[in-house]
Image (cartoon, rainbow, N blue to C red; front, side, top):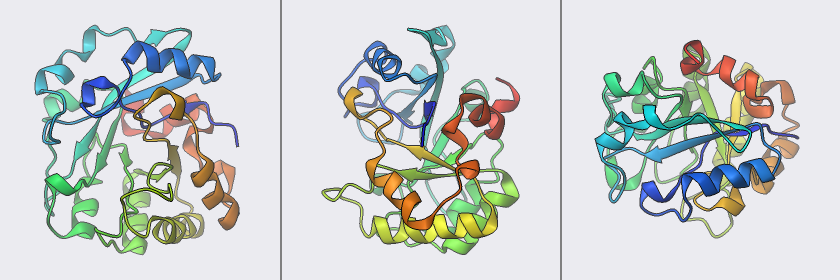
Length: 236
């Protein structure tokens, strides 16, 4: 499966990644992508960017090395009320937003949190909803994604055998089967923290093969399709 845009990557600005924005963009261009989303961790993640970083993204060119950049964030879901760690006044000016649960930032009712955050008009993607440390009702998750037009992520990094998240393959298989049954769109995200991992999806693609998942339900096989699918796409 050919993917034209990687929807989940991080640069040095996130605090625990290893390349600059220019290096990530160049690597994406070298790999023949048409687009790249840079989704830095939002402020509640230890060591990441200050609010000012996201407020100032307006000055960064959206085209580098011949590829289109979508500059956004990976938000932290803070609680079951679906509260996130950037204000709407900032989110509306970004190009894309993922919302994820991370261990340092969350201890609450997981399924309710996902359902509530998917109602947010600027949350485009739910990131790595596969971590067994945060059990989720996949039928409810997928149903709400369909109702709200939110994309669900198959996160290649989660699926690494040496990864720290728990039971990710089993959980991801369950989610993808539900997406196939309910006709819900997904994205493949590398969650790359280094340039060599951009658009590398060996474990994610294994999930799609095992479930015979239809390509038409993968939003980022095309840059234009992805932009049309995300809520932010209405303003791009």
